[in-house]
Structure formats: structure tokens, C-alpha cells
Length: 112
Image (tube, rainbow, N blue to C red):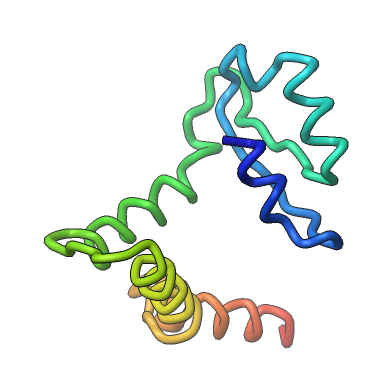
């Protein structure tokens, strides 16, 4: 999986890869490989499932709002749909607790 990612990463990319503390993610070769490709490793704290909460919430929303009942004919169709959803999620979808979109909330927070 990582080899496929490495081939597709733009040269100047510096992504963050978040995971739990599984033994494979703690292995020195795995960590070395990430570092060689300028990928910052992020792991949840031991015994604290809440560290993954934000991403699990997003993937739950993604499943309900984008995937459920959909059948994609091609990988490109899926990728385009995913890009559209992420744009919608960040810029248009109102989060009831915040009463604004995530981008609006970040922008608003910077002004305070």
C-alpha cells in the first residue's frame, strides 16, 4: 500500500499519516520508509481511542452521505465524487454544533 502511495505523492508533498499503535506502525522499517518520503507519522496515544475520533467521525459521515447506496463505474468517477464531497464537507456543509462550515469556523476563529 505504501509503495503505491509513494509513487503518487508529488515531490514537494509532506503529508501526515495517522494510525493506531498497531505493531506494524511501530516497526522501525515502516517508520524509516515514511521518513524517507517526508511523511510525518501520527499515532493515537496508547489506550485512548478518542485520538481517532475526529477521523472516524469524518469517515462515518462520508459513508452515510457519499457512499451509501452508490455504485461507482470507474475509479475516476469515485475520485471525482470524493473530491466533490470533501469540498462540500469543508466549504458548504453546516455543522449544527458550530452553525457554520469547517472553513467558515476556522476563518472566524482566526479573526477572534
